[in-house]
Image (cartoon, rainbow over all chains, first blue to last red; front, side, top):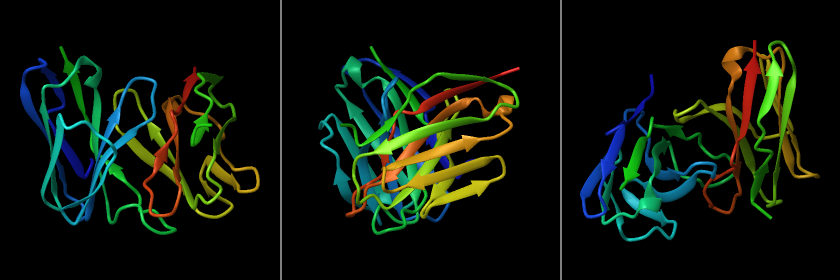
Length: 117
Length: 110
């Protein structure tokens, strides 16, 4: 149903592991986003990419490293995470990033539920 | 003050009831507004966009009050399938990204 896919859907990793989250959008959009959603908290924007260029890094720790090889694919590389990084990581896309009066609608992927032990 | 504030609920209402949620925002320059719904353990999905005074789509009505800096979502004739968390989302303008509220949880009871 969704035009944005994410893999894996669930991930359990130790603090010393390195893993990557993948997002792919099939909507022809130019902007892609990573969000973190912790229990009982609002979605937190992490990174924004517009035409493959990173336009926003919302003070995210360096243990999270994004990569955007093209407008359809977005990765989040994870290393030496902490237990407090356990959360739902959501990818979204839109025609263009948040600019101007009419914010283009963001479409979300199903998310990766991450547990850091 | 939070940029976007919502009553977390939960709102428990019987089928067929009318329920309304409010959302307040702090940035008076905010330009557009959205309601998303998020089912348990699923991704947020756009429910309605609000660019002017309001918007209506079937049983759902969103209204914007710029003077008081709040938007509301009214759901008429509630269905069991309306049970979800409703996220208020604000575009603060000035090239800033969307700001999400924490959500209001709704449970429609049979």
